[in-house]
Length: 273
Image 1: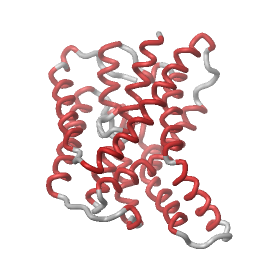
Image 2 (image 1 turned 135 degrees about the vertical axis):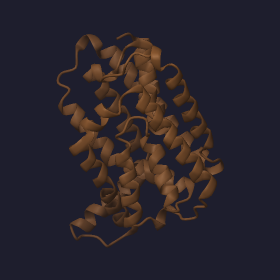
Image 3 (image 1 turned 90 degrees about the vertical axis):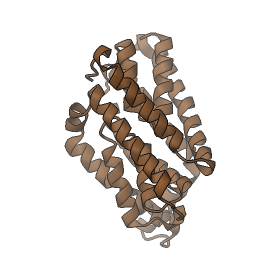
């Protein structure tokens, strides 16, 4: 793997992991154009996932630290039932559907829906849902109002993100809007809810990676840094964006990408990780 490609793959991973445009859809294009899949290089795949996990934990470090401390104190009966402790339980509850889906059906879902055509369909379907949510829903609830039903509803949506092309951030933000959360609140909860899943997925991949090849350390480092920097920017950008604008631009982008994939389908290299 050369350094330029490692930088490009890291950039794509960092941006599309957090923006609601689907990392899977872009990985399909990247594979079609270059013939390379990050899944073919276990060490590189691990580095990219480590980078995105570090980004989301680092970006929300203050909120997460407060939640973990309050939750642990309450669990050990050394602290009161505080809003942070309650939020910690909600994040765990919301993570259960995706954890179960990943343990029981991830391999089947990714193998069944990994084709270019199915990814294009998923891109388009979620784009339509995004446009419908922005047009017909008038959410007013703040983040502090999130309860167990909301956490479960958004958690089940997160489980759907195992289907390539859906986009974890996209489908969970839509679910948050459907639950009545304001756009910024839905986006923030989406990112916080991703932490347990990202850490779990990263640990799983790391355990299967083995030793890193010494001759690939430079490309690995370049890809890691590119994913780290672009992912940090993507989170900050999206949180600022949703304060002032609807998600329509991302929906239109998804539709354009889906259309491009379908038009180019006869010439695209099949994506088979």
